[in-house]
Length: 312
Image (cartoon, rainbow, N blue to C red; front, side, top):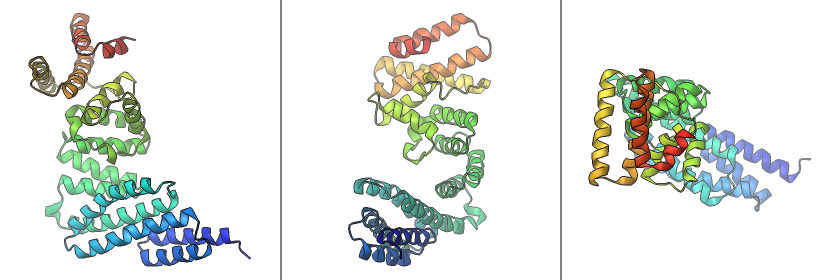
């Protein structure tokens, strides 16, 4: 005869299997059975709360008629759900993973419905489909859709960061670092850190946060410390048009900092990051050491600590 603990575990596992295959009513039945066996079991109580959360959202999904809106709603609610999980405490990981399959699987079906019309296959839709595949753990398909989106919008920081994240998740570290560095260079403020799941970027974010940096400034300092820590250290030579744009960007940021016409807490790390790119370019084209020293002196004038860390 099975013990009560074994029965509860069996019910939880059955519930998780039902959740992963979109059978929330059946999952609730299994959880109610588990609760009748052990009404103080914290995993059962938490799992019931998770299931009721998504059962309520299911009603909202049914009320929407447009498949794209349905997908958007589900992905938005996933972030809300993760906050809900943290408030409850002691996450039940295997049940949360089942809901990950449920939510991203359903959203994928809705976006795929939109995708059937070739006229809708723009970069925004490709990214959303990729997010669903990533959420469900299918990183190869996620990468393919993100690569297609990048081909359409090669200078979109958000897409570049998500591609980098997927590459990191499949242990393609060098290209992941290159795409992360590119993304933060293009437009750090467009990157949604909460969407990134790889440990490569997660460790770097936590390291920067430990320095007391938060909010929009965090996004600008990530590539700076990523470079200093040797994380975002994959370099490339700039094309002539990119070099010209880099010089112009540096000039404008220096002017903003000098004339106090922008937010200094954002401008300083953004400018330092561009100085790093300029140094890398000078090294790549074998520019004189004097040119590199000029840039290093500029870094020192903006942030002496960064200058000393760079030269350590």
